[in-house]
Image: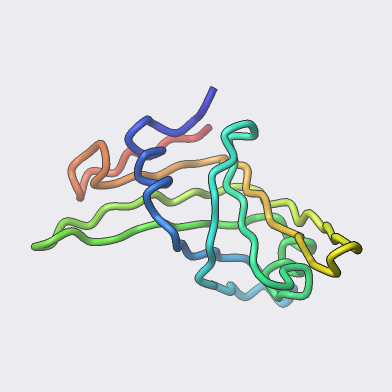
Length: 130
């Protein structure tokens, strides 16, 4: 079972870029554009990149698991739409020694989902705790 609406899932799967907000050890936010995928088995968002385990966002999640992730765009003439996922993140460290590659990633488990302009009007958010 998923906590996302069918329309939100279709939108999430149609997008390639989102922004991940993490909290640094000194308490300040850090926001980074990232690629992502939806993991249907876990009902979670997974974020990976080149050398993920060496990134600031990965280290931030290891220290503080609270994150926000936004996927959004604007359709002409001015129709904003998007999904914000607030939740807890897990830094999953993986390496493939046979290929000498870092396959680490961040998995976000939703605790709150806010969608707008997808299955509601652009200015009427669908805000719910999960």
